Amino acid sequence: MSSNSKSSNLLFSYFSFLQNLLLLVLEICPPFLRTMVFKLTFKEFGKNVRVDYKCYFRYPSKIKIGNNVKINRGCEFFPSRQFKDAFIVIEDDAVLGPNITFFGAGHDPETQQLLDIAATIRVGRGAYICGNSTIRYGVTIGAGAVVAAGSVVTKDVPANTVVGGVPAQTIKSRFNKN
Image (cartoon, rainbow, N blue to C red; front, top):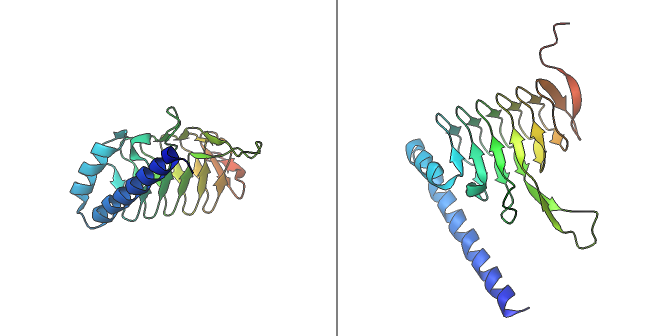
């Protein structure tokens, strides 16, 4: 292993250690202190945002959260660090159930080297993602859409649509009067 690679691994290890230490301290802080830290570390952090405890944010500077967003216990956010234009965006009035995982980056299975790939995840205004769901990089969940519990979302979800399953498929329109 080259000297440059060893230095990079060492820096990453210390970054990970310090980040986990900060997250541990945040777990015992009252909500107003947590909110102050979030406002300082996130790319954007709106008003009236509620983040429950036991949530994990890998690179908060790559996460944008709108106003009136509710993030339930145990949600995990993994945006890409190395792709400058890839973010996780949660728009106004979205509600996230417990234990949702956002994978904003991954590896391209079409290449032998499994090259890094990433794309923005966008959760639209007023969308609701039920617990234990997984959202993949490059997915847009439309405004007012609902993702059923335990779903794995690998493709865009149209606005005001209910999807569910593995992989998530359209179940119905949200406001169908029939």
